[in-house]
Amino acid sequence: MKKDSLAVLRLPERTRGELEHFVRQLEDICQRNLLCVALYGSPVKGSCAAGSSELPVLVVVERLESGDMRALLPPMDQARRAALVRPLVLTARELRRSTDVMPLELLEARQHYELLVGEDLLQTIFISDEHLRLACEREAKRLVLRLRQLFLTQSGLRPALAETVSSNYGLFLRLLSLAIELGTMESPSDSEALLSAAERALGLGRDTLLELGRLRSDSTIDRAEVLRLFETFHSAAVRLADYLDRLES
Image (cartoon, helix red, strand yellow):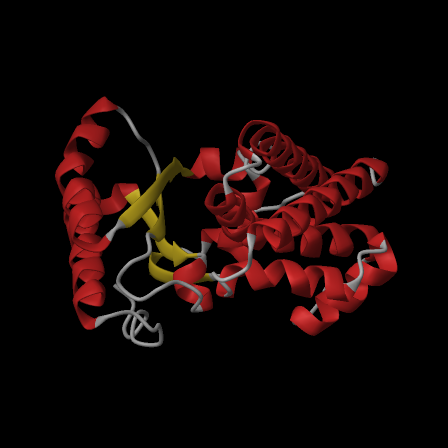
Protein backbone atom coordinates (compact mmCIF):
# COMPACT_ATOMS: atom_id res chain seq x y z
CA MET A 1 0.00 0.00 0.00
CA LYS A 2 1.29 3.46 -0.88
CA LYS A 3 2.72 5.20 2.17
CA ASP A 4 0.45 7.83 3.73
CA SER A 5 -2.11 7.50 0.91
CA LEU A 6 -4.96 7.52 3.44
CA ALA A 7 -3.38 9.88 5.96
CA VAL A 8 -4.35 12.95 3.93
CA LEU A 9 -8.03 11.99 3.93
CA ARG A 10 -10.48 12.98 6.66
CA LEU A 11 -11.52 9.47 7.59
CA PRO A 12 -12.07 8.11 11.10
CA GLU A 13 -9.05 6.20 12.38
CA ARG A 14 -11.03 2.96 12.59
CA THR A 15 -12.23 3.35 9.00
CA ARG A 16 -8.69 3.98 7.77
CA GLY A 17 -7.53 0.86 9.58
CA GLU A 18 -10.27 -1.29 8.06
CA LEU A 19 -9.55 0.08 4.60
CA GLU A 20 -5.83 -0.61 4.96
CA HIS A 21 -6.63 -4.15 6.10
CA PHE A 22 -8.91 -4.61 3.09
CA VAL A 23 -6.19 -3.51 0.68
CA ARG A 24 -3.63 -5.84 2.28
CA GLN A 25 -6.08 -8.72 1.92
CA LEU A 26 -6.55 -7.90 -1.76
CA GLU A 27 -2.79 -7.89 -2.27
CA ASP A 28 -2.42 -11.25 -0.52
CA ILE A 29 -5.27 -12.89 -2.43
CA CYS A 30 -4.77 -11.42 -5.89
CA GLN A 31 -0.99 -11.20 -5.99
CA ARG A 32 0.09 -10.10 -9.50
CA ASN A 33 -3.49 -10.21 -10.73
CA LEU A 34 -4.18 -7.01 -8.76
CA LEU A 35 -3.41 -3.95 -10.90
CA CYS A 36 -4.96 -1.02 -9.08
CA VAL A 37 -6.94 -0.09 -5.96
CA ALA A 38 -8.23 3.46 -5.57
CA LEU A 39 -10.61 5.19 -3.18
CA TYR A 40 -12.74 7.70 -5.08
CA GLY A 41 -15.68 10.08 -4.92
CA SER A 42 -17.07 11.79 -1.82
CA PRO A 43 -14.50 10.49 0.72
CA VAL A 44 -11.70 12.01 -1.37
CA LYS A 45 -13.59 15.28 -1.91
CA GLY A 46 -14.24 15.43 1.83
CA SER A 47 -18.00 15.69 1.32
CA CYS A 48 -19.14 12.50 3.05
CA ALA A 49 -20.28 12.19 6.63
CA ALA A 50 -17.50 10.68 8.68
CA GLY A 51 -18.13 7.07 9.51
CA SER A 52 -21.65 6.99 8.05
CA SER A 53 -21.15 7.12 4.27
CA GLU A 54 -20.16 4.43 1.82
CA LEU A 55 -16.56 4.28 0.64
CA PRO A 56 -16.43 3.71 -3.14
CA VAL A 57 -13.32 1.69 -3.99
CA LEU A 58 -12.19 0.86 -7.51
CA VAL A 59 -10.46 -2.52 -7.79
CA VAL A 60 -8.86 -3.31 -11.15
CA VAL A 61 -7.55 -6.80 -11.90
CA GLU A 62 -6.06 -8.46 -14.96
CA ARG A 63 -8.62 -11.26 -14.99
CA LEU A 64 -11.83 -12.00 -13.09
CA GLU A 65 -13.04 -15.56 -13.35
CA SER A 66 -15.34 -17.53 -11.06
CA GLY A 67 -12.51 -18.70 -8.83
CA ASP A 68 -11.18 -15.16 -8.51
CA MET A 69 -14.60 -13.87 -7.46
CA ARG A 70 -15.02 -16.63 -4.86
CA ALA A 71 -11.65 -15.75 -3.39
CA LEU A 72 -12.68 -12.10 -3.11
CA LEU A 73 -15.93 -12.80 -1.25
CA PRO A 74 -14.56 -12.89 2.35
CA PRO A 75 -12.56 -9.63 2.24
CA MET A 76 -15.29 -7.84 0.31
CA ASP A 77 -17.95 -8.90 2.80
CA GLN A 78 -15.80 -7.97 5.79
CA ALA A 79 -14.94 -4.55 4.35
CA ARG A 80 -18.56 -3.84 3.53
CA ARG A 81 -19.66 -4.66 7.08
CA ALA A 82 -16.77 -2.98 8.87
CA ALA A 83 -16.22 0.16 6.80
CA LEU A 84 -19.15 0.44 4.35
CA VAL A 85 -16.79 -0.24 1.45
CA ARG A 86 -18.64 -0.27 -1.89
CA PRO A 87 -16.29 -1.96 -4.37
CA LEU A 88 -16.37 -1.48 -8.12
CA VAL A 89 -14.42 -4.44 -9.51
CA LEU A 90 -13.35 -4.33 -13.15
CA THR A 91 -10.76 -5.97 -15.32
CA ALA A 92 -8.28 -3.65 -17.02
CA ARG A 93 -10.01 -4.26 -20.34
CA GLU A 94 -13.43 -3.49 -18.84
CA LEU A 95 -12.11 -0.24 -17.39
CA ARG A 96 -10.85 0.87 -20.78
CA ARG A 97 -14.02 -0.15 -22.59
CA SER A 98 -16.71 0.92 -20.11
CA THR A 99 -16.44 4.69 -20.40
CA ASP A 100 -19.32 4.69 -22.89
CA VAL A 101 -21.79 2.94 -20.56
CA MET A 102 -20.74 4.38 -17.17
CA PRO A 103 -19.13 7.74 -17.95
CA LEU A 104 -20.50 9.56 -14.90
CA GLU A 105 -19.11 7.16 -12.31
CA LEU A 106 -15.78 6.82 -14.09
CA LEU A 107 -15.50 10.59 -14.49
CA GLU A 108 -16.16 10.98 -10.77
CA ALA A 109 -13.47 8.39 -10.10
CA ARG A 110 -10.98 10.05 -12.44
CA GLN A 111 -11.55 13.52 -11.00
CA HIS A 112 -11.49 12.63 -7.30
CA TYR A 113 -9.45 9.63 -6.22
CA GLU A 114 -6.60 8.50 -4.04
CA LEU A 115 -4.46 5.69 -5.44
CA LEU A 116 -3.91 3.09 -2.72
CA VAL A 117 -2.10 0.34 -4.61
CA GLY A 118 -0.77 -0.32 -8.08
CA GLU A 119 -0.82 1.58 -11.35
CA ASP A 120 -2.56 4.90 -11.87
CA LEU A 121 -4.99 3.46 -14.42
CA LEU A 122 -7.68 6.11 -13.95
CA GLN A 123 -5.55 8.68 -15.73
CA THR A 124 -5.35 6.44 -18.80
CA ILE A 125 -9.09 6.30 -19.56
CA PHE A 126 -10.81 8.57 -22.10
CA ILE A 127 -14.41 9.73 -21.66
CA SER A 128 -15.96 11.35 -24.71
CA ASP A 129 -18.12 14.45 -24.39
CA GLU A 130 -20.96 12.77 -26.27
CA HIS A 131 -21.03 9.75 -23.97
CA LEU A 132 -21.00 12.13 -21.01
CA ARG A 133 -23.78 14.26 -22.50
CA LEU A 134 -25.98 11.23 -23.14
CA ALA A 135 -25.48 9.99 -19.58
CA CYS A 136 -26.28 13.42 -18.14
CA GLU A 137 -29.39 13.74 -20.31
CA ARG A 138 -30.56 10.28 -19.26
CA GLU A 139 -30.10 11.07 -15.56
CA ALA A 140 -31.78 14.47 -15.92
CA LYS A 141 -34.81 12.95 -17.65
CA ARG A 142 -35.00 10.19 -15.05
CA LEU A 143 -35.00 12.89 -12.38
CA VAL A 144 -37.85 14.69 -14.14
CA LEU A 145 -39.88 11.48 -14.30
CA ARG A 146 -39.25 10.70 -10.61
CA LEU A 147 -40.37 14.16 -9.58
CA ARG A 148 -43.42 14.07 -11.82
CA GLN A 149 -44.49 10.63 -10.62
CA LEU A 150 -44.12 11.63 -6.97
CA PHE A 151 -46.05 14.85 -7.49
CA LEU A 152 -48.93 13.05 -9.19
CA THR A 153 -49.18 10.33 -6.55
CA GLN A 154 -48.08 11.95 -3.27
CA SER A 155 -48.49 15.71 -3.64
CA GLY A 156 -50.26 15.84 -0.28
CA LEU A 157 -47.34 14.33 1.62
CA ARG A 158 -45.07 17.19 2.62
CA PRO A 159 -42.26 14.98 4.03
CA ALA A 160 -42.06 12.93 0.83
CA LEU A 161 -41.81 16.02 -1.36
CA ALA A 162 -39.23 17.72 0.85
CA GLU A 163 -37.11 14.57 1.15
CA THR A 164 -37.16 14.03 -2.61
CA VAL A 165 -35.93 17.54 -3.35
CA SER A 166 -33.30 17.31 -0.62
CA SER A 167 -31.99 13.89 -1.68
CA ASN A 168 -31.85 14.77 -5.40
CA TYR A 169 -30.51 18.31 -5.14
CA GLY A 170 -26.88 17.17 -5.11
CA LEU A 171 -27.41 15.09 -8.26
CA PHE A 172 -29.12 18.06 -9.93
CA LEU A 173 -26.19 20.36 -9.15
CA ARG A 174 -23.68 17.85 -10.47
CA LEU A 175 -25.62 17.38 -13.71
CA LEU A 176 -26.00 21.14 -13.98
CA SER A 177 -22.25 21.68 -13.59
CA LEU A 178 -21.45 19.04 -16.22
CA ALA A 179 -24.07 20.46 -18.59
CA ILE A 180 -22.54 23.93 -18.33
CA GLU A 181 -19.07 22.53 -18.92
CA LEU A 182 -20.26 20.59 -21.98
CA GLY A 183 -22.23 23.50 -23.39
CA THR A 184 -19.91 26.42 -22.69
CA MET A 185 -16.49 24.84 -22.05
CA GLU A 186 -16.65 26.74 -18.78
CA SER A 187 -15.89 24.76 -15.64
CA PRO A 188 -17.51 26.38 -12.57
CA SER A 189 -14.91 26.45 -9.80
CA ASP A 190 -17.32 26.89 -6.89
CA SER A 191 -21.00 27.24 -6.04
CA GLU A 192 -21.01 30.97 -6.76
CA ALA A 193 -19.55 30.43 -10.24
CA LEU A 194 -22.07 27.63 -10.85
CA LEU A 195 -25.00 29.89 -9.96
CA SER A 196 -23.77 32.61 -12.30
CA ALA A 197 -23.09 30.17 -15.15
CA ALA A 198 -26.51 28.52 -14.74
CA GLU A 199 -28.21 31.89 -15.03
CA ARG A 200 -26.32 32.72 -18.22
CA ALA A 201 -26.57 29.33 -19.93
CA LEU A 202 -29.97 28.02 -18.85
CA GLY A 203 -31.77 31.08 -17.57
CA LEU A 204 -32.04 29.55 -14.09
CA GLY A 205 -32.14 32.39 -11.60
CA ARG A 206 -29.60 32.20 -8.80
CA ASP A 207 -32.34 32.93 -6.26
CA THR A 208 -34.24 29.88 -7.54
CA LEU A 209 -31.29 27.57 -6.93
CA LEU A 210 -30.58 29.09 -3.53
CA GLU A 211 -34.23 28.62 -2.58
CA LEU A 212 -34.10 24.93 -3.46
CA GLY A 213 -31.16 24.49 -1.12
CA ARG A 214 -33.36 25.65 1.77
CA LEU A 215 -35.16 22.30 1.88
CA ARG A 216 -31.89 20.64 2.87
CA SER A 217 -31.46 22.75 5.96
CA ASP A 218 -34.88 24.08 6.97
CA SER A 219 -37.38 21.52 8.28
CA THR A 220 -39.92 24.13 9.36
CA ILE A 221 -41.13 25.11 5.87
CA ASP A 222 -44.90 24.70 5.62
CA ARG A 223 -46.70 22.47 3.14
CA ALA A 224 -47.65 25.24 0.68
CA GLU A 225 -44.03 26.43 0.47
CA VAL A 226 -42.74 22.86 0.08
CA LEU A 227 -45.17 22.32 -2.77
CA ARG A 228 -44.05 25.53 -4.46
CA LEU A 229 -40.37 24.62 -4.12
CA PHE A 230 -41.07 21.12 -5.42
CA GLU A 231 -42.74 22.58 -8.51
CA THR A 232 -39.78 24.93 -8.94
CA PHE A 233 -37.39 21.99 -8.74
CA HIS A 234 -39.40 20.07 -11.33
CA SER A 235 -39.31 23.07 -13.69
CA ALA A 236 -35.55 23.47 -13.22
CA ALA A 237 -34.99 19.76 -13.91
CA VAL A 238 -37.10 19.97 -17.09
CA ARG A 239 -35.05 22.95 -18.26
CA LEU A 240 -31.80 21.10 -17.53
CA ALA A 241 -32.93 17.98 -19.42
CA ASP A 242 -33.98 20.12 -22.39
CA TYR A 243 -30.64 21.96 -22.39
CA LEU A 244 -28.73 18.68 -22.46
CA ASP A 245 -30.96 17.35 -25.23
CA ARG A 246 -30.26 20.44 -27.35
CA LEU A 247 -26.50 19.95 -26.93
CA GLU A 248 -26.67 16.79 -29.05
CA SER A 249 -23.85 16.82 -31.58
